[in-house]
Image (cartoon, rainbow over all chains, first blue to last red):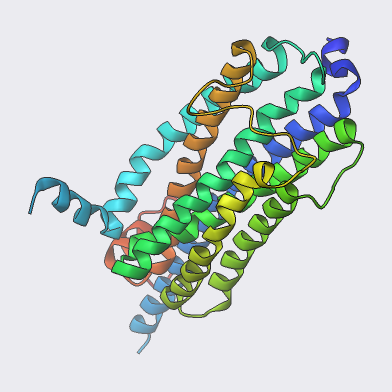
Amino acid sequence: MAEFLHMGGYGAYVWAAYAVFVIVLLADALTPLWQRRNTLREIDARLSRESNRKSTP
Amino acid sequence: MSPLVLWFHKLGSPPYFYRLAGRFLPWLYAIALVTGAVGLYGGLAVAPADYQQGDSFRMIYVHVPCAWMSLFVYAFMAANSFVALVWRIKLSETLAMASAPVGAAFTFVTLITGSLWGKPMWGTWWTWDARLTSELVLLFLYLGVIGLYHAIEDARQAARAAAFLALIGVVNLPIVHYSVVWWNTLHQGQTVSLMGQSKISSSMLWPLLTMAFATHVYFFASLLARARAALLALESGKDWVRAIALAQPGREVSAHG
């Protein structure tokens, strides 16, 4: 296992490269979820405002 | 009209696309995750060490698929930009703008992993040679498209301006691809070839091709997810979006509603 992590002396470079790959793509995958939630929240707020305006005399 | 043309028209309708993309998404993510895991395992544990570069060559399994994707995504973005500008199809605008951040992410990973590979092999993190510089220009093109899209208030005008920039930037694609042929660069030449013999042993090649497949599938997953989110924002006044917003489980019930 230690030998596997060592990567023939290149461990730091190899694992850093794989970490960058995973972290950047993970962030990329989460962005649309976050955007979708924000958009729906905004629409929701607008719909509530509109129904409030209608119900007040 | 033929059924195919009819279907194509239907696909261009935002609510239909939203639903269809939502049905495909979990499968695309699952396929990308599984093949990506197999590819990374193959690259890290199964493929033998390189006789010249030792274990450092394993960075190829993240670097090269991302580099291929940086070009592929740009071509996809440019093709959609072309359709958006010529036929003014709203969905093409959305797809072009949704692919830009994914392409930028792949280009960024390409540059960083390339730098991490360059340090032990070339003795430098960075050099201003043709391949590296043109790939950096590619990142700036992506950032330019994203920046221009967000700088203009009207979303459709913004998409058209950014699509125009994306089309102009196509000139950079052959420069990136052929830079190792046209100029004398520190970067090594092409190892894997679609046509003809690849200069790599099959035990090293299959994890690379698996990763290439996984990153392509991932791109389409991320693209559809982003396009869905963008369509909700673009069509926020429409009834179909209102229905989705009202059906949200966590929706706060207004006291006056």
